[in-house]
Image (tube, rainbow, N blue to C red; front, side):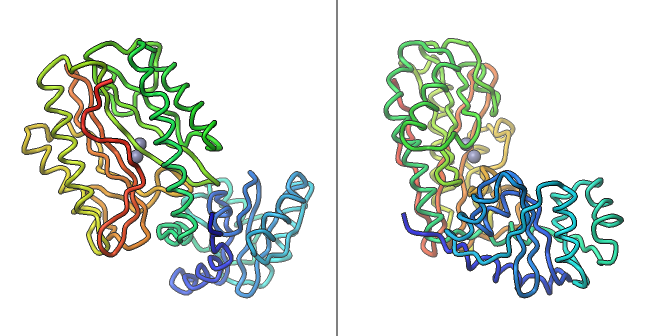
Length: 366
Ligand code: ZN
Ligand code: ZN
């Protein structure tokens, strides 16, 4: 796979400092640290100073941090502190005289903020910043897109291998486990979230957790799942039926949601508001009389996190640009008939979008 241009990210982050009224930024969200440095461990603090970068971690990550940062081409001074106190002292030295020190407001707890203010950096002016790294993360480079497409292919192929098993009346848990296993076998480091398998009446809950319920003939089955490749997530949903659907309404639900989803995908293009994509999906479901049964927003950004910016919803303020990766996933949920959701993940282009998922979207009768 093509390398990602990790080293270019911190210089771009610095360009946002003036607007955020800070001179340096203490990055504490691990997913943002991974994005900026390539470090995949579970504990680190990164101080982005005007002219250099200080990476503080503990003894467990002495060697891993050095090799991952070097592998990503990121230049940083790595300071290993064997205790929390030693790490604090390293940062105090490095932050001395910096002036306005930005914190990631959404990721710092009240207790941490008080500690930073009174104990760690009493001489600095602490500044609450919002989404400085998250803003950069919205637009994916070619290497990131390639990883997400690879994750989607793994999920697609895993589904193709296990789908026939639905006819053997597995429980929801059993089917979810088989799907997860096939994704791991196909090269995923993990599922990108807890796989959803929701059959019959359970399908009316959009985020049902797989249970020991057996999947029966004539029932709709919503399967929502994804794979992780090198930290990047995929996300897809398909709705199946074992045999023919038990009711005409169930079949109509699938047809309406498929049409709604197609309209959403067709609306995705650089320059279009996230809100407009949501409207395109919602209009078709409303026309069918099920506006109140579409229980969630149309979609979300995907990347290192399964849910990230930009948002594709009625209250979204995002405008899509080339390189955004978003889902389109309308659904209809009726307690008497179950649920239908169809979801693809795609990368936005100037002309439209490239959909990562290939599995058929019309009703698949197993
Ligand atoms: Zn999903
Ligand atoms: Zn999703």
